[in-house]
Image 1: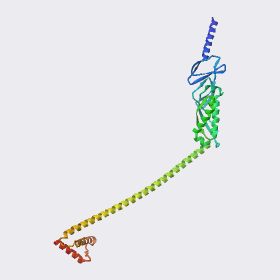
Image 2: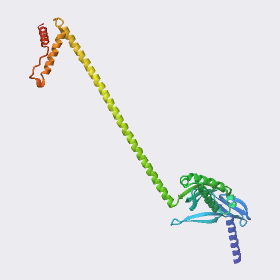
Image 3: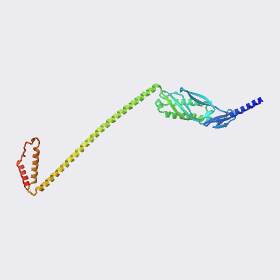
Image 4: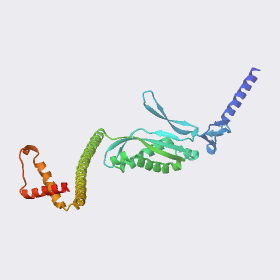
Length: 326
């Protein structure tokens, strides 16, 4: 009885082991290569699949796994896994020293984004896919940087990324790998080169500052001279307009005075026309009187002035007397 129970237990365990080995569950975005008696049989898709235990066997592929410790140090390990990840994978490679065309040793850190698109080729076309991708990236990076100067390397990251992506994508195509992006994370020239570059940049900034200051001073002088010139022009225009206005005012004043005198002469002529007196003689007499009044003003008020032709003056006064009588 006891032996029978033991046999049944062994059979149950054997059945469970067979079922466990024959039942394969593949997660989403993963796949599995199945070999039958050492030969490729099929590729499992995501979901539940059944294989024949001890005859069908999953083939393991090497993976690159990185761990970041608490102190910031990154550890990279290679391990084997029967599950092939079809998602985009990121490889962060360690810094490597490359030489530019102008013989400057520079440390560069590259990041690679790739994806397995053909699991069968990735399994059978290359023995160690992570190591092959890493070595190919390093050599391609050296070749690309070796064709460029240090200044071009520092200012042409997009160009370097595009060239590397094209080279790596073409080389890894037969491995069933699609390289999506390549990014240069850090470019570190030697310390003495960095110091020289900083001095050069500082000198360039000082030069630009001096140029801007000189241009500002020149612009200020130009604006100042233009302002003075415009001020002179405006002043001249103002003087010109003032003289024109004064001339117009004097002309209008003389015209008004002439019109007033003409009107006075006309009225006087009309007034004395019936008396037979001479209007011209009357006007001259009035001018004599006005002139004598002006002469007697001021400091010469005690001095009496008589005109040189006194007889003419007396005659003019007699004419006024006759006019008053009339």
